[in-house]
Length: 108
Image (cartoon, rainbow, N blue to C red):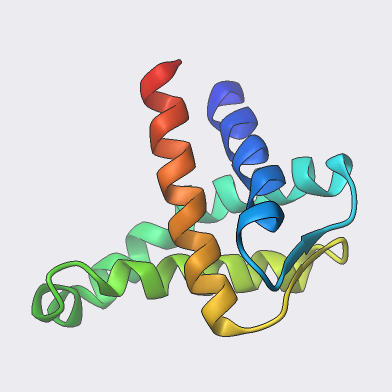
């Protein structure tokens, strides 16, 4: 879990440099956001995926991007130092964080 937390933190730290509309005030805020996002991914994401399974099947899995964006919006609402300007920024940020997390997990 510590490895997953650090990977999410690194991905969150890199996101403001790539996605316009996402900002992280400090590394501590990124650590807290990574922890909260990890907990949300562990507890809430499977429930949301089951509830939205029909639309996820119809969109061939692309609705998962919306679920990731919603989870990022929840993190931004909970953490004052992590801000997202728009829902499109959240979708792009969720996509970027997912890709970076996947690559870093594959490397480490």
